Length: 263
Ligand SMILES: *[C@@H]1O[C@H](CO)[C@@H](O)[C@H](O)[C@H]1NC(C)=O
Ligand SMILES: *[C@@H]1O[C@H](CO)[C@@H](O)[C@H](O)[C@H]1NC(C)=O
Ligand SMILES: *[C@@H]1O[C@H](CO)[C@@H](O)[C@H](O)[C@H]1NC(C)=O
Ligand SMILES: *[C@@H]1O[C@H](CO)[C@@H](O)[C@H](O)[C@H]1NC(C)=O
Image (cartoon, rainbow, N blue to C red):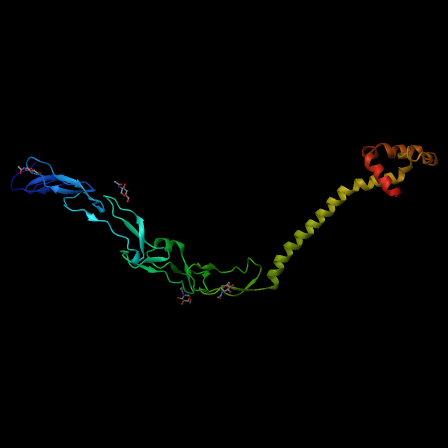
């Protein structure tokens, strides 16, 4: 496409050299010699410890950053031929500026400020954040976040003093609100007691009946053990009715109870 005298136009991944379009070197490579009438551009890989990120006509690759421990930096990601090494600050430090060439030690978060884990992770600034409305920090600490104010209502108390960014809300007992907690609790206890009474009545009633029946019909139910008593009782019809129906199912219990009562 080259026309003498005119500015020539090359493709994105090309550059102009002596009126010719030469190919650029790909990322990870650097230029060794320009193209001419017969030869293409010659490129070569970046040497170790160097990188080159874009399509280039540069003859040099840039050296990787070195993470300087004395500046508080440690390796975050090792570089390769296309990417620079990435450093980060040691734990408990943050970058001194946007370029992050050096790090500063995190200071304790003052009263009214809390530790913010996300800011600490990002390391771009101090990890302390001012306590937002509804939270407080009453200590100077490197780890304590802002804590929400105590909710007096949830505890059934009345707020005596509103919280600030450095102090918790102060609660005090209030007659009306403590009553509003006592009433449902009392109601619950009463309900439980009533339920328990009903349960006891239902489950002990049949046994009591059985026991009464045993007492009434004792002599007749144990004819083998106390044969002489059979003759003494004079109401055979009544005893048959009592003895045959519910009592017959609990033979074992009857005899045990009967024996205990004898003792
Ligand atoms: C083109 O460049 C190559 C090296 O890249 C060189 O050997 C050759 O002589 C050059 N040809 C011309 C015509 O300049
Ligand atoms: C170089 O490292 C980057 C990340 O830093 C990665 O995405 C890329 O694939 C690596 N390239 C090679 C050739 O290893
Ligand atoms: C805490 O509250 C006081 C008074 O409302 C205010 O002056 C101060 O700036 C606040 N501090 C922070 C860290 O938000
Ligand atoms: C900070 O507030 C908490 C909760 O109200 C309290 O238990 C603690 O004693 C306070 N600490 C200081 C140093 O004021």
